[in-house]
Length: 113
Length: 114
Image 1: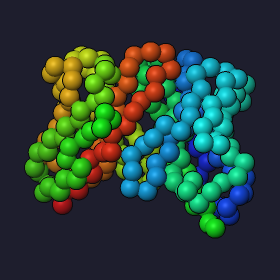
Image 2: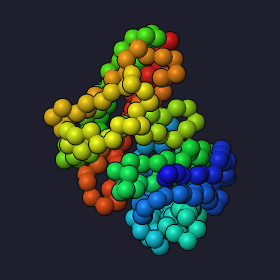
Image 3: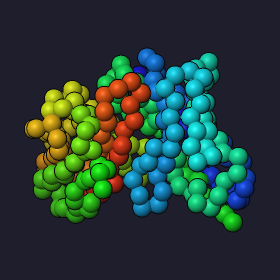
Image 4: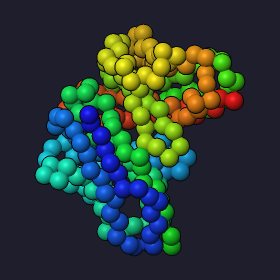
């Protein structure tokens, strides 16, 4: 079945450090891939997405590239800010399963000044 | 505010009681999803609707869980005879049916079963 494996946290970085959060997936069809972010006390918000192989999603300085050959969708940011502190979820959506989302367990990021 | 709304935001109940949660999706969205999220975990899919049709319900956690979307607009999730293990955040999301659709999430209803 479909699944997402996400790098475990928590992750603590200093401001302006480089961020990578690893995400790999297993899917029976041709999934779309997503990163969602959950800020403290708030709901899940879409951060970025990619719908086919080699697509790059980007938003707010974050990027992730859909790599079919390695079944990965790693999240990166060149210089994190304190305001990026949140929990990040990798997810896939597979049309073959009615577009239900499969989420990773989430990675908590804390950025310290 | 035209986002997904959920009510109530918090619910405390005693074991054995029934609870019902409501979700109002974004108005033009025809798909509606329910998820459960426990502490330290990602959301877990429960069920989804396309318009008023419930297209997938095999992932509902037990027969105590049921969901409806009678007119293809708002939806309700009911848990009968609640157990302490039902304590979690219940999330609703909606989307419009296109390839690679994005799901937009509501703020969730946090349930505590005493």
